[in-house]
Image (cartoon, rainbow over all chains, first blue to last red):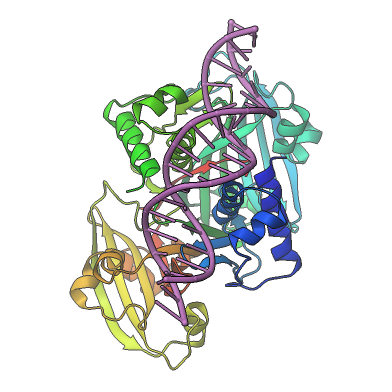
Length: 235
Length: 235
DNA sequence: CAGTGGTCTAGACCACCTC
DNA sequence: AGGTGGTCTAGACCACTGG
């Protein structure tokens, strides 16, 4: 664990443990420097990390303040895709299909592979607190995700890729649409044909830039409450 | 303009001007250091900025590579809310209502003001390339946004706040929902009652942490194609 | 103008990738 | 082993806020 991450964690825990309200001023840099026995730059780096995570905001010449929001029941999207930031929710999955296929032209294009290469195809329904959250179809490049089975797909496939396969997930591109459910989707999600859906296509990359997963996800609109924080209009 | 921002800009322009494809390796740090006559840390800071903006990805021990995507016609959301990243689109607005009001309890709460304080209420339809993009209701804290008129509201209110009033926009909290249009909204957007909508409530803050704008926006689902990039699953 | 955050530098040292 | 990105430091100097 890097020093600035460690410091960021400790400050974060401090905020959460003491339940500091929005606008609370944190100690000044010099205090933090001596408290964590480190240099100014490192403290600033730790705080910048927390700023990106939406936990604090920094005001030049004034101080660093706690940032909090006050609505419950929203799935938070903090620059990491939806699927991960689900702590505090009870997520399960039911696998509808799982097999090895040759990719369609579109899938091959998005995964940057040859139409003759193999992919794992997984179709599943994910549940949040017992309600249908989404219907998901994913294509994994089999050269990277070398093995999958029903049991793995019932849990978190990403945990398995990170921990089981030792691959490092890097970043992702998401294409988001609002559409209407077709009959088949409505049935799976327990909704009506023509009801709204959030439809997201995502390409996930390893940290070395190789795409390993192309997913199409239709979200149940009744469960689709998301919370975003934007930081820094002056990037 | 700070040095690292300047360098980031130049690298970005370099990428765009030469239309470098995804995966192109950038010069190594040492080259960039001498090219921009600066220190290693500054170059790294510039590159980290570009990484956050989704323009490059960095691989330890290997290099820094260009990151690009390949779909057109999506509104890009790069950590700055929807409304700003609309370059390349033709955005106009029609003002339906504009007056000074006393806020409801909900509005007062979100703007952290007293129910007796004044707010500007603006209701407008925004158009993208001639199509209805969204129906927007905004409440501005009049103590901060001291003056508004029809002409300003027809353009970009945020440009006016930044440039006209000299206020610095800091960050925002967004609460996103998928819902169905009611009859009135459908009429304004030229859609059918019951059609899907993306409904977003946003609180915008100045850089000193004061909320100045609470907005409720209903997006036309036919125009609602958004592009997100996530960076760094290891924040 | 004092207090506070932020940039920039030079250089030592570390972590990871590729061969 | 050699190349490349990244952390960390100490300190000089700058920029903004607020009384």
